[in-house]
Image 1 (cartoon, one colour):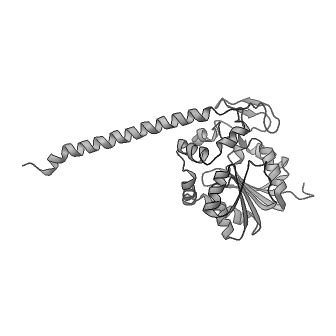
Image 2 (image 1 turned 30 degrees about the vertical axis):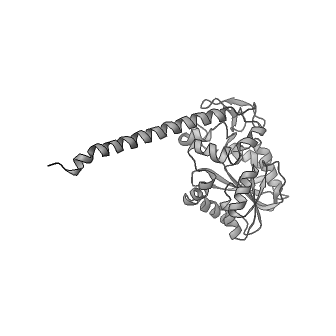
Image 3 (image 1 turned 135 degrees about the vertical axis):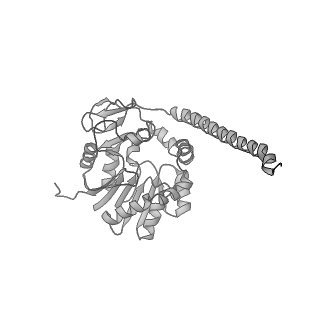
Amino acid sequence: MIRLRHILHPVCSAKSLYRKVSSRFRKMALRLYRRLSELKFRKIQRGQRNQCWCGGALLPFKWHSSFGVCGTCGCYVNRRPPLLKELRRFYTFDTYWHSRMKLKGYPTIENRAANDLSDGRVQRWLDVIKQFGPPKGRVIEVGCAHGVLLAELVKRGYDCIGVEVDEKTAAWTRQKVGIDVRVGIFPDIELPDCDLFMAYDVLEHSLYPDRFLRHAARLLKPGGIAVIQTPIDRVGSGQPFPEIFDELFDDIEHLYIFTKESINELAENADLEIIAEARGVIDIDINIFRKKEQGDA
């Protein structure tokens, strides 16, 4: 007796084959897209750096040829940082928040807000602010992206200002969450003083982390707090961050990866003191800085 499944078997097989071929084609197309995109990013013009932000000489770093290790503070330093003009072109709505994010398999800015809310990082940041930050006042967030964190702080009564590199990103965020977003590359941007300064996963992208923190300190009112999230190698031996090494030692985006010693020196250099350390939801350090007052040792 001939059953329907016998008649449909070739059809089902054909559909299955089509799905497999389509899936394989999509994967091949994605790989090709990523290769072409990576080639485009590799053409970024770069400078050359032979010493750390602290002035220390760079020693060879066996895990990545583009980075050196500061012989003074142990900081990992990108020897071939993109030029400032390239950074202005790179950190834009289309290039960074779309092309680059798709290349790396990360959410674009339109989807990042939902991602950051669902994985708990926004709530983690709010908890840290509640524990260590001021109960009210003006907040500045450098690299505010989708602006969800600032929007949550506005609901809690804070006066909030965001900073993004390009106007298109800033305009998109203003329209989406209704906050004040200024345009520029920090620290080369004029901003008012503040009670709380925030930068999440931004300091490692800065050409001059010492200037970055010094300017943050200048913006803080007496007793003001800065919350900085950035990777910090606290082990100091072997391959740093082995599970996410390739992600962190991205020599287009990340210009410095810090150690405990180097972040302490940066704080001292900026007249800040680290009053607490916390962990983000992805095991990246959150450091809470307080502006030193006159008479502080």
